[in-house]
Length: 372
Ligand code: NDP
Ligand code: MG
Image (cartoon, rainbow, N blue to C red):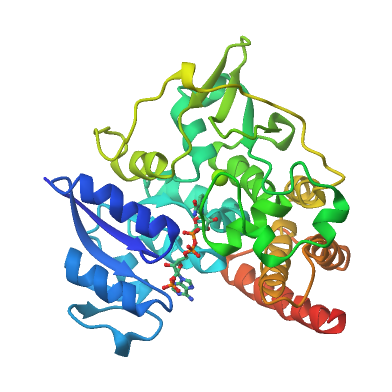
């Protein structure tokens, strides 16, 4: 029987690659719904090609060829076997929670969901018997390495280091938007690409890993590995280290997540050969240069509302950087400033989280306007 899938964010980097994966596994999937934000032209093309039963876009009047539903309705459609949440930023949280509440498995690309509400989302998934399968390559790697979480001593998350790995703080300070968007290994959406340049992406991933694998922060290490061949690793209590290795391609983790627990030939373009890999380097991250990584660890350890505050301030600061209003290095300063004015709160409901997220964004924008 075909697996019924909806893709939330089918016009984005992950969404488009997911459809390429599905192209190769046509007999395995039926596309239930596709959704876009602003790119209605591409969504209409996708509708013509994949004939989903439903679609959504911010401006629904520009969509033709299928029935329109809200994101909420799409994620409540119990005919879905799996929903791939591939929107960027805070908009991923509601679709994920809706899918979970309806007992639908989630292939989760949107890391901000767990940063904002991991304390709610993971227990909710457990109660509803829902699998959350990570798409993020590091977490997908760890998911593949873990047999028994109780025997794991440590998670080791790799980081490519982004475009400023071998640059100075001065280079980072004068970085243009196009320099920050020139990621050496991965072609991704703009928000995550900027996060990768500041290493906030790795910070978000540490918090994501903490929630996905229920691992304390002092047992999550980050190591810089510029070649992006080792996608992450785990150390067992007996000292054995298991790493997941492969060529850097998001097709593989996307396919893993949407076909889990099965495996198929799919889109794999080339067989992996260790002999073709010239060298593998590993180094400790520079926490002074990449302040956001340290900030994320600190926020994660304090927990409660701190990661929510960090995430909201960061997202607004990234948008401001992309609009040319602030410098790349100001992102960390703005996040730090917002955090210094915030008193941690605990046991928040989803409504509390959305309210706080909104409040922090308003304050961040106010601060950005003062700054500008
Ligand atoms: P993109 O920016 O490329 O895509 C985002 C998607 O969300 C697009 O389909 C976009 O639609 C849609 N969208 C944006 N705003 C709205 C809105 N208001 N309502 C509904 N839909 C909206 O992001 P990526 O694919 O790069 O990233 C998606 C998520 O996956 C992020 O959380 C990221 O951290 C994570 N991730 C991405 C990786 C990658 O390689 N790209 C790797 C690991 C994780 P439209 O374009 O039509 O406006
Ligand atoms: Mg990643």
